Image (tube, rainbow, N blue to C red):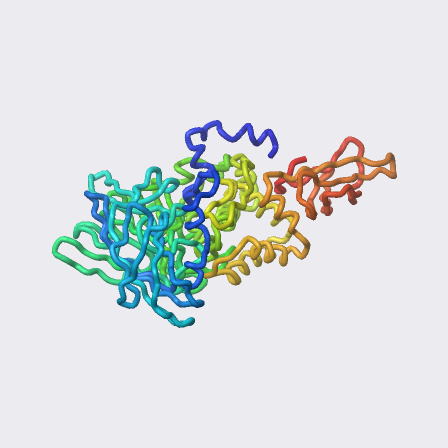
Length: 557
């Protein structure tokens, strides 16, 4: 990183330093110490997980505000993929406890295994068949300390003193509040139903479409249903004194319901703030990425007592009905104050993170890098390409290059917080390599077409991006994703007079690094390919003038 950029990092953003490096879109785990057994149990797709594939979650839960407790049951319908080893791993974090487990109405025995349970399966389950395990559980779940970064259940009160309950659990895992297969590799193929029982004067809002209200004497149960695959950590509950308004957006796949759920005290603010920004976001993102992925499930913004989270089809919103990120511009360019960060960023995750999901959180840069780049594309679509470039370059001030962006596999450990802002620099530099915005847009559309509703790896994304570039890019990806290095361009003038040439190379790169770079010299543009080896380039030597690379490449020189 250019030293001049480093000196700009803090200034007026000092109080937001932690939040700048870890935006609300992901609750990153901060521990980088030696893996424990619990890490392995949580992060490994082991033999007790791999033999069964989740098809559907049926979640029924009753949160008790005064005791901060939960009581509920969960049905997990699954397909048998291979002969089972005699056990299945069901994840549920302490201090919650399983009370009983039934497999097709037959009780099963189980024992605690770190933050999970090892369940004894004695039944013969034919490969290709489906079965349902029923789990009753209860207890006092972990309460969030600083959601969404240090998450769990959120128990608070609105300004009127009314109870307000929510959840934020990315990184920490959905097993903090309900039993599940808590691994990002396995999403329920047919979705989930979420039934939440709350006092009669409260409303619960969850993912997907509202299905029914079951009224009782003092409590009501609200049931919502998601039809599409969904990450466990995206499944949510939001119980409070909500009011609702909405509209219909005419999108690429037809009419799309846009629903807004806010506390009654904030309805007038929300009516002024939400609709226009949401429509613009949807229009710009459908242009760049393709149709909104979840027309069946609709799109909601739900006011929450924390900053925000990409809860699929029920985006958590807590940005105070104002532009920027808590009223600030993370890029320092000025453009970030012209739109609401949480609406744009968290909705961007509907395409990258929710529609396209990774198989291991070590590859979380795919979620966060492309979603943060959606901010760049929003700015570009709304204010012009120059503005988008300024916003992208402005985000470099928050890149720290502490550890690689790709984390450690099989232990539920992500890479650096740079997955946001350095992720943007990788994608923006790749866009310069393509030198064709139509092709770049086609690549983003193809990414959603090819990988949508699936869990993928970094290698899948690298292959697609290389396919569209038409040149080898492994050295490029290895440098930006797997090291903390920033490529440094060296230029050297060889010879004199008419025989003089510019020789160039990159250092601080991985083997095979070779990219085309756009230079400007004396008002003339030149595009030349530079590798890790010294080589002459076709840029004339002019006395007292040096070629300058485009600032849109994330390189040093």
